[in-house]
Amino acid sequence: MYLYGTNIINDIKVIGKIEKCNELKQNKELSFIIAIGNNNTRKKISNEYDLEYYTAIHPTAVIGIDVYIEKGTTVMANAVINSGAKIGKHCIINTGAIIEHDNILQNFIHISPNVTLCGTVTIGEKTHIGAGTVVKNNIEICNSCVIGAGAVVVKDIKQVGTYIGIPAKRMEQ
Image (cartoon, rainbow, N blue to C red; front, side):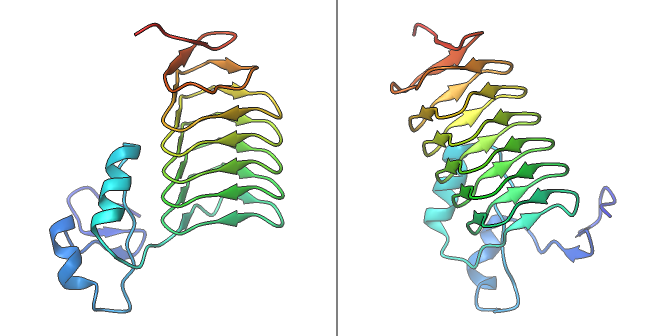
């Protein structure tokens, strides 16, 4: 349980700010997680700090068989990750997200609350999928995209950009 103003979260002692990591990494009993929503910032920090990273999976999350989740990833309450999915390093799978079978999520992805990724979807590195978005099966989304909240992705996204609407279309810059 987290109590505001304390240094304990879920019975785990919070030691301090990021600057302390390098002095603490010699302690082999410690592991770290980057609790920052920005994909680029998570990547920058993970590249700067050679640490033992922890994978946090909420007890109400449902993880299917043959699912691979790399270190540093966080899976929040009531998320569902089905069989054959592969989740990269330092991803955030937020509350109530559904990651269907055989999805591939590369590193540093942020999946917002209540996103649905149907089967065999591939998401490129550092992409952010907004709350309530639906991605139909067999879709590929390239690296470094932002998919706006509530969008419906029905075609592959091959160009970096921000996509919104139903169906999702690239916003003009």
